[in-house]
Length: 380
Image (cartoon, rainbow, N blue to C red; front, side, top):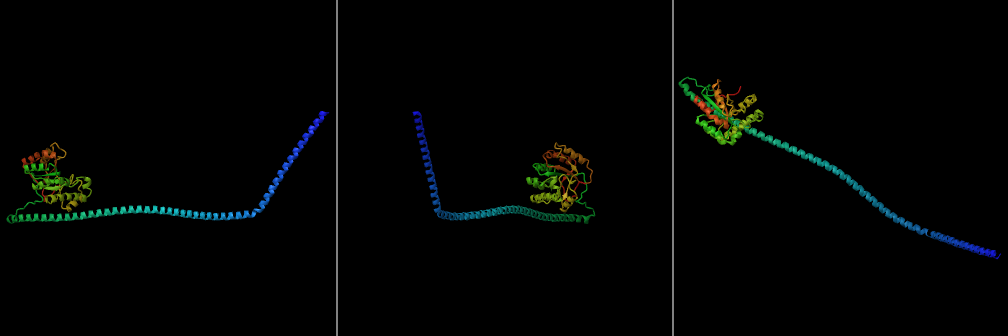
């Protein structure tokens, strides 16, 4: 019994402690709750006092914000204006670049036009120069024409002076020198394409056989051997011209080119020897290149065109066989015209030339130079 009572007392003590602890907890909790409510109320009262200050601070901040914003807006507007100006400047610059490109194109075009104009002007000057040369050449031709007419008049006068006494003494007919009758004992040796280094040796052999010849020469070769040209004239040979280029595509391009080459070579002979010649020979012969317009141009210039009727072919028969070719053609010759032998100033021709001269001398031929009063032999 005593144990149960003790146990009961112990439980009552424990219950009291528990209850007291709970009450204490409630009290502490209540304190904290009330303390929190008090703080809230204090805060509420504080908030009621601060609105005016807050509003003033807000207004001040707004004013400051407005000022900053205004400045910012002005800065933005300024930036936008500057950007607009920059854009405008870029646009203007783009336009300027476009205009610059147009100006550059125009300048290039003007340069091309100027260059073209200068070329045209240069061509005009060149044409005028050519015209001037043609006029000077025409003057020279006219001068040559007058000299030839004067020369022919002198020849005619001399012939009349010689014939007049003969007519008074006897009524015999005097043969015309311009068209001599064909004779088997006169031969006219002609040499083309010179002069060359062998020209003076050819002159020595001709002199040995008392032979005269006619040399149809090229202007560039005469420039290379002017002493040979002077020696030909000095020793009584006839000099004529063979042109300048000896090129079919050049000399026969037109009658003007044909006459131009011949006159250029003639002028060199005139300057070098003071001899005015009118004897010409067309490269490769007058047929088929010298057509009617070419002949008309030559006749207008008083040029005397000579071909040949015995071709030695010495340019091909370089071993001396041309000698027999010349002799054979001479023996078979039966034309009513002078014998005109074609040869060339070549070393291979020189090597066998003496055989030709010896044949003609041994057979009683007189070897003469062509005369401008003779009727020329031409291909038909």
